[in-house]
Image (cartoon, rainbow, N blue to C red):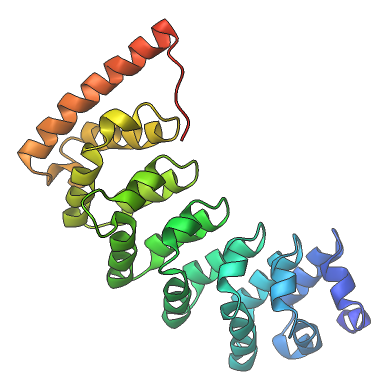
Length: 259
């Protein structure tokens, strides 16, 4: 039955129903029996990764085909187009899959290619999800590099300010707070507190205020308990006032500013 697909592989992959047949072949049929299917993807991995059905098939190959040659060829093509795929509507899922399930050297290569573009990528709808995966699955050293880039090199923390007010990047900032160690969390919160009063006037900045409120509400939980007493008191005071301000805003109909 599988052999009857020979010559029709790419047509099936791009078909709404046919792609499910190809996925099942990859999942259930021994690799040596479907090598002709796998080899038909060589040289077309990026194009398939940016296709609504092809991206699913590529992920199945990465999951189920453990032949070193196949993995090497597929990953070489993916690694040559990391930034393009990360920003693509469908390609971003392939990059996220490698970050979550790939080998450490593959994750590190992807993170290395994105380093230096984290703020830009975080502001992009699809790539922002990839950056979140980098923070989740990167090594502590790689995560630190990303955090340093987000904080910026000056006391104004311009990259962080931009990201907190952005419709997509604000979620990356929240992921940083979720994944970083206690020392970095206190440092980042100390940088955020400078901008709390301004953030509550921005539609997406309010998401950051809400996240910090949750950290405060966590009270004795590890995520908040190790903050200094002064930092805790500051947040409790400012956020109580921020809440009051938002209630007053709604009552008198003050419009929110967009970033």
